Image 1 (tube, helix red, strand yellow):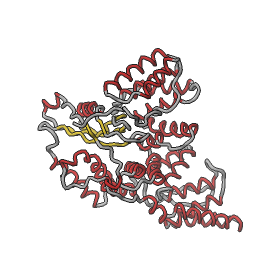
Image 2: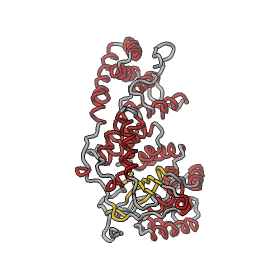
Image 3: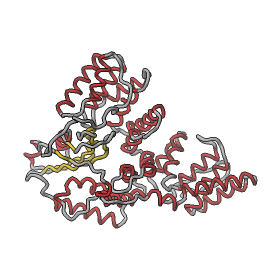
Image 4: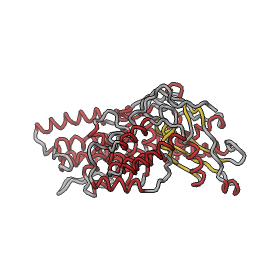
Amino acid sequence: MKRIFLGAALTLAGMAMPAFANFDKAMESYTAGNFTEAYRSFDALAAIGDYSSAFNIGVMHYRGEYVEQDPVEGWAWMQLAASQSGSEDMMRTAGKIFAALDSDGQKAAQQRLDQLLHTHGKETILGDLNPVMLSDEECEIERTPIAKTQPRYPTHELRRGRFGRVVLEYSVMPAGHVRDVTVAQSSADSFANAAAESALSYRYEPAAVTEPTSGVKTAVSFNITGPVKNQHRLVAELNEWKGKAEAGDAVAQYVYAYRLGVFRSFRRFMKGVDLEYQAANKWYLEAARQGIPQAQFEIGRNMVMGRGCKADTENGLKWITAAAAAGVPEAQNYLATSVGAIPEADRREHAIRWLKNAASNGHYFSGLLLAWELVSGPGAPSAQDLALASDLVAAKPVNYFDEVRILETKAAVAAAQGSFKTAQKLQKRAIKTAGKLEWDLRDANHRQAAYLRGEKWSGPYYFDIELAPGSVQVAAE
């Protein structure tokens, strides 16, 4: 670890245990002089027990970087980090700062340390961030599929005798249809395209909810002999990753947990394999503790949604925010779109901040959402925002297959530019596409009505999705 000292300048902490990969990203922001982003990142990491980040929060308070200069607050954070990590370097530095405080300052600093120990102490953090595991039956959050059409086998892949596997992730709407189909993994683009096209017609049991159920994963297997016939190979792969996970390999722990979640869609073919959410959560948690940002996102999202554990939004978001600070686009996207009761003005600022981060990392879906936010706010967007939105919707989709959202976003951008005829044509195509898929059209029709009146659309993408009598019903196959 880098030596810490108090001389002409106070040096930030290097990596301390636990060694979070997220820390490097935070230090990059600090070194670049982006103190706002650095402080936010250090704060997110301190919340999950990274005491190098806690120490650096103290340094920033002591120096007055992003926050007002405050040696009392600075010492409290540094001493928290020293006491919880056992770092002698941190302890010496904190001791020099404490000795320079007057008696009132020392008393106030000790009181602030007591508060931080209560919220950021190792014992508190371990207790808060450990999910209360539950069986799938106890959770009762699973959306039940009632119709899943097998995709067409790509002709040229069939001729070559190639086996394929695709992992899809999407949201399930209250009425049961799916949106925002994204390919997370695939063995070839041809298999990815076939699987995603088929997924657009999936149907789930309707649910009396007012928000989409996000992060639903499905594995699609392409086998020349028909439905899944290679279950022995799948089980062997799982066992290989499990062995590495049990040996303490953090990456393997994440991969094993992820595959358990993906292979839930193969449950009837994999008898004897524990594919419940809580089994995956166990390994996500182990990998998250070892600093794997993707695992932090997955365990955080499962905690927020109550998948395989008791629902815990506050502590789940701590894991997700840490993953977002590390640059995981999916975590940044999640924070942008899952804002709870944040007031609209704050919500838009919050969403745009995270979506810009995700879009800059090449996440197409986040770029699409960012374009929507830039043009759908109250009042006319700035010329700069309009130009950025236009560039974002002009980009070629990457691993994203919700053509309706793409068309609707392009229509919203056109309307914000005053091109209402173009907006109407694009929106008409979106409505036609959604109609063919038998999706709920209420939101789409509301927007078309606005464009016909010569008005740009202002407001969220989903605003009228509560399950209503007469919503699309599809019989199980």
